Image (cartoon, rainbow, N blue to C red):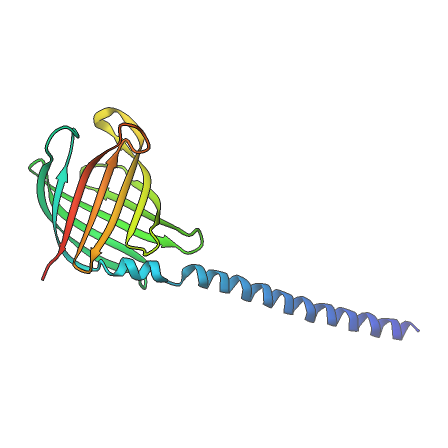
Length: 196
């Protein structure tokens, strides 16, 4: 009887181990699929890739919405990195007569289902971060984020940014100050034309 009990117990332990291993494999496979789905570039990333290339830029900046904008020119090189997952832009121009360089990163999180963007430049030590949603056709993305504004002594000022693809050779980037307030105004517009 003891021998039979030991055989039955051994069989149950073996079955439990097989079942647990299969469940563990299934959980592992489900986890791997979730990671793969979250990390695989999709249509939003294909839309970002349409901006890849060299661009001439016309920059308009409004310090006061009642006054005409200051205008300057620049160039931007845009590339996709990490297998088409993230767009990186390298901007060169001038700001109030001084050389100016900035770098943007833009992406779309499949998992969170949100667009995101960052900006850094050589006139600031801060990082600007924003998140947004797109129009149904994916050509317009509206971001909301925060920035520090040393001129007005405001930290985490809410801003709105709009990226609009006009066609394969033109797009516009807008930045709106005092976003989500009655005093909201367009503070910057960059018109991009693809270099030929």
